[in-house]
Image (cartoon, rainbow, N blue to C red; front, side):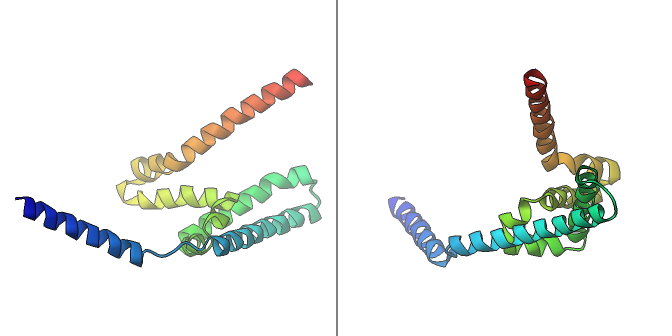
Length: 152
């Protein structure tokens, strides 16, 4: 019995050594640079969209909401077409941080649960990830608004 346990332990140890050897080494600096560049490029696209709305006669405050809507649409469209998956794999956090990343999480969750139906699948599950973000944003906005009201 002891020999069998020792043999199993040796197999587990050998497997762990094999995993350690084959596991890809993280490339931290490369990941940092790529995330910075891709995230920056997404923000440049957002700035171009904002500039287009401003050039059409809107003030910067008026142009902010449609710019967000366009960026959310671009992120959702790229997710639906499968482009955002490749971008996220390549850029990591650079693709996840801007508002397009938030759009990607909502659309990807909805697409994953589409076969469960439109209401109980897509409608209910799309906010699985986005729900906590929305709640945190709303609560933070309430606190900031209260602090602004008290200090004005």
